[in-house]
Image 1 (cartoon, protein in one colour):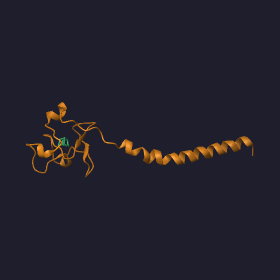
Image 2 (spheres, rainbow, N blue to C red):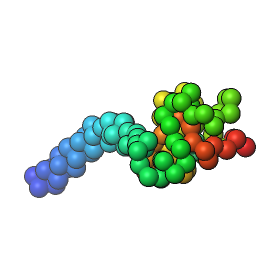
Image 3 (cartoon, helix red, strand yellow):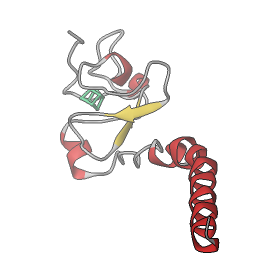
Image 4 (cartoon, rainbow, N blue to C red):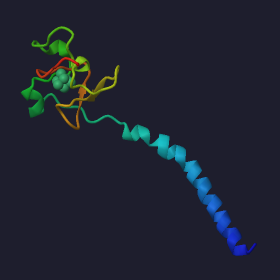
Length: 107
Ligand code: SF4
């Protein structure tokens, strides 16, 4: 065995060890960053005002009992989440307790 091939084997083993040690960081350590929520939709945004969006359904005179973003067919937040995406507002989150005039029942 030559000295040069021994170094190459050592380098290879070091790279494998480095890759194994970084795998948890890449697979698990960054996922909270990637899963961070989108910015909340402002009630003052023109698109929010257009559909009378409120962050608290209790402040929506037109809301029917039991309707809120959490029970809306366009809401894409996880069950029990405080906020989540809405198909009506790409790139923005809405409050689960919110409501707007485009509320639709879940199918
Ligand atoms: Fe909430 Fe549904 Fe209106 Fe989106 S469409 S803001 S989820 S009530």
